[in-house]
Image 1 (cartoon, rainbow, N blue to C red):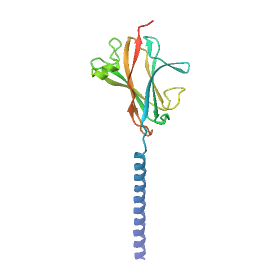
Image 2: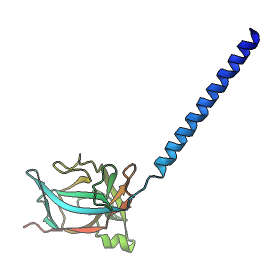
Image 3: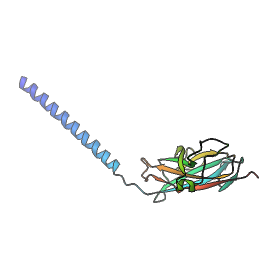
Image 4: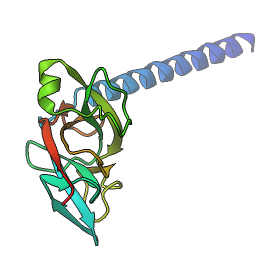
Length: 184
């Protein structure tokens, strides 16, 4: 009886060890497959818009103290399929020597100042590209309300896309300037 008990205990331990090894191998294979999924190059487009009555209207300039500027990121893969997942982090070009948020001495700078190194890209905030931040638009879109501006100037903007679990490469949109003109 003692030999049978020892045999059963050894068999149970072997079976348990085999199950642990098989499970570990399966999990490792699954993780390897996920990390080696094909990732598509992305298409990243920054849009300047105003929103009114459920409609987004493209704009390239606005008079100061008029309307709120909406920054809209649009991301799709190389097959022109909108991104289903991922995050767009919106940035503006900011002079290094001026404090952000000062309405008397604007730190916002044109994109050329960032290119020249006298300003740097500063984060505004991030939004998911699941259209939750863009009413009435589908996936692939993320919107950020920059607001109303008081001082005429050109400001450079861009966004960085983080494509975790999206199948699309992370990347940066082309930088573009937006112009606020004197009040009409």
